[in-house]
Length: 81
Image 1 (cartoon, one colour):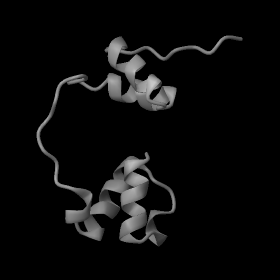
Image 2 (cartoon, rainbow, N blue to C red; image 1 turned 90 degrees about the horizontal axis):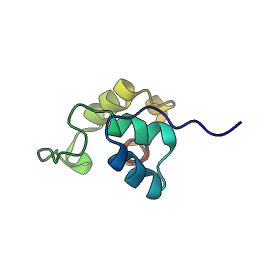
Image 3 (cartoon, rainbow, N blue to C red; image 1 turned 120 degrees about the vertical axis):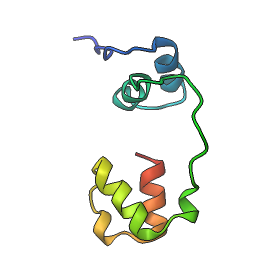
């Protein structure tokens, strides 16, 4: 059975993300955001956030094993999710 491409709102962005090596699921999730393809504001750097803030963000997006992670590990997990 052929791989099914998830339904996406911004097909161009989806394809660009896939070309960069993102998974189908992550590419579709990003391309389906309400402002897909639009540049946003400046976010605070992970390194400038507290470990507690990073933990809360990891919890929000469902990163497993977050309670045992160091700040550095939380940053890596958030960047690679």
